[in-house]
Image 1: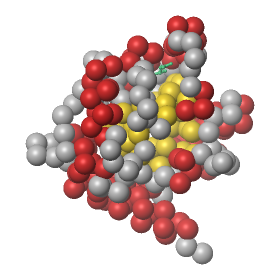
Image 2: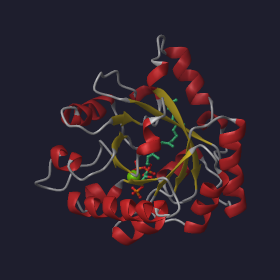
Image 3: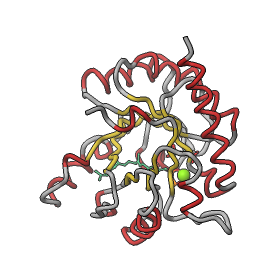
Image 4: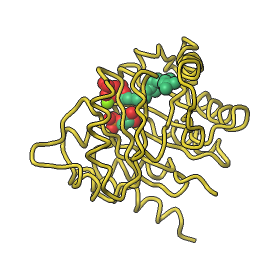
Length: 240
Ligand SMILES: CC(C)=CCC/C(C)=C/CC/C(C)=C/CC/C(C)=C/COP(=O)(O)OP(=O)(O)O
Ligand SMILES: O=P(O)(O)OC[C@@H](O)CO
Ligand SMILES: [Mg+2]
């Protein structure tokens, strides 16, 4: 069976610590045309906040994945299609590469391996909380980014590589370099996608575009525009 994300164009990342725009519901989020929901954030996360969002989204048709930022917030919920567990390839502290994972496996018995997948992050915005938190070395040129992507796929068997600019719009050249370096793995891009044009441009350089802050800051109509942008970019790439 092929992995579900190979069919995705767009993910909406919901931060359980942030509100939706006033008057909007999770039903509206699920009606944007987004292909999957990723529930996660780095700051002030708790199991209760995670549960609340998963419960609210469970009855709609969009797959739901939890993206835990640490082992303490992983929830056990049948409504989840799975877990997308980050591993940060350019973190300075190996805790964020394998250490947290080792602790998780040590503490929990009976992990649901069939629903557990990893995302090989390359974190590139030095001002993001995720970069600070993981002490990521963000000083990477396009060749470096491409090489990390290739290492993730070819040496570590990662099915998902994630170029992360959380909070700011990234460099399309670096994203494209990662894309060109991959043969099989799926490239996620996230960071600063805020309208049709940015989604269209990054859609030309990545397999899946992830939209986060926009949902909480601008709302579902803006998110729907980004779905259209990436979908159009991918439709054009697929033309003969
Ligand atoms: C082993 C387990 C279960 C967990 C460890 C998982 C790891 C290594 C997490 C590292 C941090 C990471 C990549 C988290 C993913 C979520 C993410 C990138 C959230 C967005 O971060 P920001 O947007 O910078 O933070 P805020 O939105 O919270 O300010
Ligand atoms: O919030 P934004 O900047 O859209 O980033 C999305 C996502 O990649 C964050 O992990
Ligand atoms: Mg964020």
